[in-house]
Structures are given as C-alpha cells and as structure tokens.
Image (cartoon, rainbow, N blue to C red; front, side, top):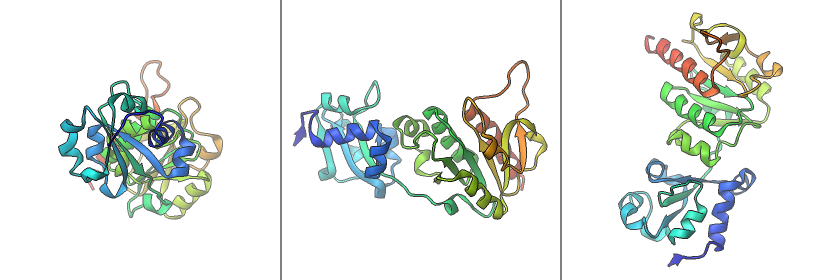
Amino acid sequence: MIITSATNDRIKEVKKLVKSASYRRDKGLYVVEGIRMFRELPVKDIDSVFVSQGAYEKLKEDILKLVSEDEVIIVADHVFSSMSDTNTPQGVMALVKMRYTKLRDVISDNAFVLIAERLQDPGNLGTIIRTAEGAGATGIILSSDCVDMYNPKVIRSTMGSVFRVPIYISENLEEDIDQLKSQGVCIFGAHLDGKEFYDENFEGSCGFLIGNEGNGLSHAVSSKADKLIRIPMCGKVESLNAATSVAVISYEVLRQRRNM
C-alpha cells in the first residue's frame, strides 16, 4: 500500500513533528531525514520509516539493514516532498524516539562538559554537538531556553553525533552547575573579561559555559564560573561565533589531554 494523500493522518503527524517542538516533546519523537543520517540511527530508537516511492528501490538495501520490509511506509513522491523540511528531499525519513538523559550521564571520572545557555541558532547547536563528539567531550548541558535540540536543522547539522553524545536539558542551570562543582568539575566561563584560555590547564575535570549568540552569558550564570576565559583576538574582532568558539576551546582541551 502506498500513501498518496498529503492529508493522511500519518503524514499530518510527521508534518507536526517537523514544525512543532512542543508536539515533539508530547510524542517523544523527532524526525531524521536523509540516507546518511538514517544509516547511523540506533535501531532500538527507530519508531517508523517513510520512503518515497521513487527512492525506494535505490535505498532499499540500506533501509532493510535496520528495519524489516513490512515496517517501511511507502509514500508518493509528492507526498514525501510535502513532509520534507529540505529543498531537495532524499526520499527517506524516520521518526525516532527521544533519549532522556540525566545530569549524571554527562559526567565521567575526567569530565569534559560543554554547558550552553540560551543558544538560539539551530546551526550553532548542531555544530557544537558534532564538535563535542570530535573533541572527546563527555557530554553537553543545555539550558531549557536553548533552541530545541530535536529541531530538524539541529539534527542535520550534527551529522549523526546527536545519536552518540549525551545531552542533558537543564531546568535549573545554576543549580546544575553547582552540582557539577560539588563533584570536582572546574567551571570555566567564556567571557570577554576572562584571561586568555591558552594559559589554563584543562587536564582535570572541567566544564565550559557558552552564552547566547548576541548577549553572551547572563550575569547569574557567569558568576558561577570558577574562572573566566577568553580566546585571544587580533584586529578589531571582539569575539567569535558561538560554535567556532566551542571548537577552538574544545580542541585545546583535546590537545592538552592527549599528552596525559
């Protein structure tokens, strides 16, 4: 059976999951689109799979490595296009179960935690998640007023890292920072008033506070830092993009720890 109507209830549900963060939370599901991301999905997290009629034969081998043929929902090409959040749909989409991570899941014996407050750009957050995996971070903490980590643009930007990096959503960031500190995690705040971060030692357990793209860290959160740090700048540049700052700091942490 092929779904040929864009008003089908299953199709309408997918569209709501693509557009609405609150609906995603209510259902505990989010959307992953594209064959590259699909290949990296944890099988246990897959709820359902939609494939366009035109792409099915081409993608069938990859799809059936993760799910059985009777679990695949085939839809007409025009219907798939109406569901897709991209300009050039690749023909495969999965509904995926959300993970529910706790604070303890992002802490290890030698923690390296990225802590973001009020990030609003989906591309920034997706890049930060991907950078976290690449640089060996033990996890990420997001304030509850950050952009939704399950926003389709965030998911695409992670290139699969979202399936592997522990990400905890904090309802009270200040209290959770205190909890990290009580467990021996040194908190560094990225701040224009900080000392050059190349002078710091990041070999011990550490967490890094990253603020909103336009306004940086709030005073309440930055005051929780044990130390304020900044990336040195040349020319008239005052600061870097949030995701770029995270990458620069994260790879200095990795560089120092590779010599341990």
